[in-house]
Image 1 (cartoon, rainbow, N blue to C red):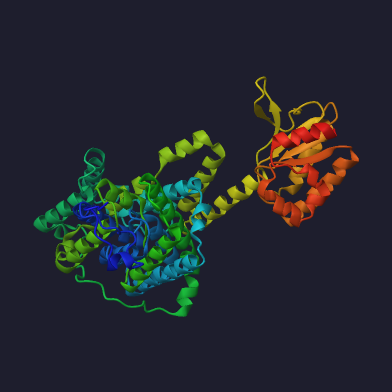
Image 2 (spheres, rainbow, N blue to C red):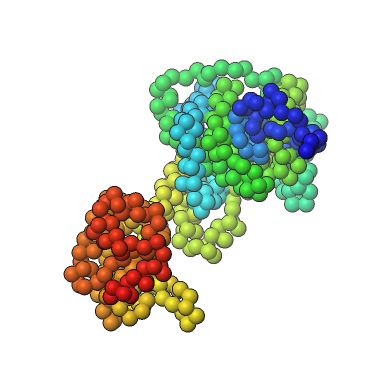
Length: 563
C-alpha cells in the first residue's frame, strides 16, 4: 500500500549517512524544525555557561552547537540524542587542564581542542572494535553519585562570580571557604542580578517548562546592561565576542602535550560512552526504536573531531538537552540540524550584543545547571533499595568534591567494576525446597535446610571462575557435613552457571572426588549450554554423562533410582 506520508526512497535512502533522520516524514518536518529552534533558544544560554565550567572563551560554547551537531546527525544512530557541550565533561576537562595553561588563552583553547581530538580518536577505535557494550560497565548508581558531586563542585565554583567575590583556589572546599570568608565584601549589584537570573530560570522550569527561561534571563540582562551601563557601575561584562563561523584546522600543540593529556582523555572517553549510551538507550526504548550503539560511537567520534577542528571543547550526549528536544516535539536529528542553523545565524549576525552580558549572569546560569545535576531524590531511592550501593554513590560524590572530577570518574569506573566482581565472587546461593503445594522455594545455605532427607539441590547464582570456585566447593562441603540425616545425593542446579573456566574445573574435579569419598552422588541439572565447557575441561567424564541433565525433573527421577 502506498504511504503518502513518506518521502520515496532515493539517493538519500541509499546513503549510509543520516540514519538518524531517515525516513523523512513530511508531516514531521515542521515539528522537528520548530523543536530545533526551541532547543537553540533554551540551549544557547546554557552552552555559554558551560564555557565558564570548561574555562574557554564564550564563543566556543556556540561552536559546540554547530559542527558537532551536524557530525552526529550524519554518522550517529539515535534519533533523539543531543550531542553538544555538557557540564560533566566540561568539568573533567577543566580539572585536567588546570595548571597547563592560562584559562581562556589561545594555548588553553588549543589544549581543549586536542582533548576533543584525542577523545574522538578513542571513540573511533571503540567503534572499530565494536566496544559499545563498555557503556554497561559504569553503573547508574555511581553515575548518580558522580553527577551529584559534579553538581556541588560546579555550583560552588561559580559562587564567587555570582557574588562578586574574588576566588583564587582551584579546590572545591577551599573555594567554598574563600566565598564564606568574603561574604562581607560581596558586590550587592552582582548578587541581586544573580538571584534574579536564578529565580527566572527556576520559576520558568517549574511553572512554564516550554518557555526558554535561560534565554529570557540572558536577553533581559543584556538589555538592562546596555541601557544602564552595568560595566560603568563596576559590574564585569563578557566584553567583545568574535563573530562569524569558526575557522577549521588542527590545534597547534605538540606530542608532549598529547602524552600529558592521556588521563583526562581517558576520563572523558568513559563519561561520554556511559552517559551517551544510557541516554540514547532510554529514549530508544521509550519510543520503541532500534538503537545501534556502535554507530553512535562513530557519531560521537565525528562530533568530537568536529569540535576539535572548529576550535572548541569536547561534546557529549546530554540527557537534559535531549529531554528539551523531546518535550518540544522533535523526533529525529533533523531538529538538531535546525538548531545548528539557528546557531550559525547567531554567530554571523547576533554576537555583538553579547559584549554587554554580565559575567555574573553566566555564573547564575551555570548555578542552575549545577542544581539540576544534584540528584538527591535519586540518592534517596538508592538508599531505600540498596544501602550498600548508596554508600558507593556518596563515596563517588565526595571524591569529586574533595579531590576532583577526574579522580571521581576514575573512582566511579573502579567501583562499577568492583560491583561486577563482587556479584560474581559472592553470588546468591540457595538450597531448593518444596512448600506444601509442591512449589520450589529458596532457603539460605547454612540454615540447615535440605531438599528432602538424604538429598540436597544446591543453586549457585553465577558463572564458575577462578575467584568464586572455592566458595562453591566449600559451601557444598559445608552443607554435606552438617546435614542430618547424611546427604546421599547432591544435585547442582546449574541454570545460572553459564561458564566454567580452567581453575574452576580443577576445583569441581576435586569436589567430585571429595564427595565420592563420603559416599555422596554428585549430579548437575539445567546443564544446557554449559555442557560444552564441561566437555572441554573433561568434567563430563569425571562427573559422568549419566549424571548431567537438562531439567531438574530428569535429575530427580534418576537420582532417586541411584541413591
